[in-house]
Image 1: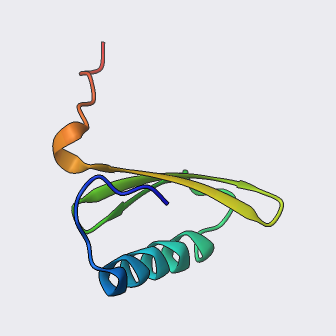
Image 2: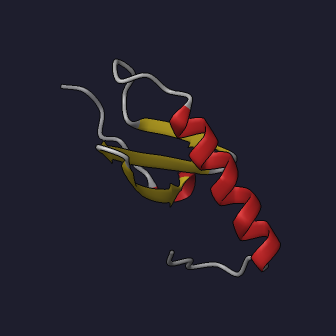
Length: 66
């Protein structure tokens, strides 16, 4: 994984474990966006593989609906 802020190894393991458990608990009918702590996580599941991308809430700007 790539991190753009300093986290200790224990903090990284805990964060990754929490996010993975949260994604595994979701059904196929739920959207692929998860909020966790101050992050937004987008994930995609292919068979038994998960691809995850996390961004800080400060970096996410959703344009207003038209």
